Amino acid sequence: MIKYRKQNALEPEKDAEISVNLTPLLFFLVGFVAVRALLGTLLGEDT
Image (cartoon, rainbow, N blue to C red; front, top):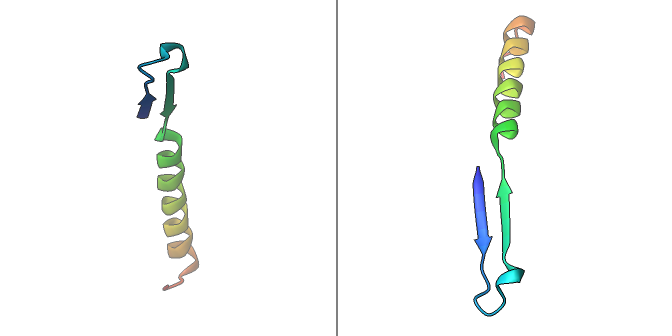
């Protein structure tokens, strides 16, 4: 989880906060690499 907060001292009502959750991207990357490695071993490709 990455959080970014921008504060405006003169106008506090304009404060902004952005949060990004990278957990789904991490699961996708791990799954993609695992499936690619599995298919590589099943098909016998040496890349």
